[in-house]
Amino acid sequence: MYGDEVAEWNQEVFQLLKSRLDKPYSCFDGVLNPEYPHHWLKKFLDETEPAGWRFYLGNSGETIRNAWYLDSDGKWYWFDGAGIMISNKWYKYNGDWYYLDKDGRMTTEPVMLTPDHNGALQYPGLTK
Image (cartoon, rainbow, N blue to C red; front, side, top):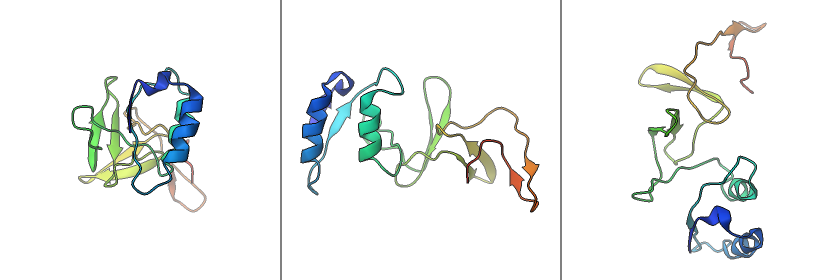
């Protein structure tokens, strides 16, 4: 099934759609741009993609895998081999370490690491 501008669809349509996505052969592809971060569609996407966010290229429909993605705001994101965006953790790439924040954005501002009581370096805001 394919949908265009699905963020403008009625929420009840998605309840029906969800009931049809439980089959191994079922698939839904859609184009959307939720108007704000708390749009009801974001909750739907989070429920159907429990492992994390994926980004599909508009020109091919393929997910980004094992690659950086630069968005239109100049923010970088890393997607793993399964196409899942990495967030809230340190990631080593080509010998360099990067911190990807809770929204998956690469941190580009200077940070201060402080040792904890065991001597392990801690980054403010990093969850365990």
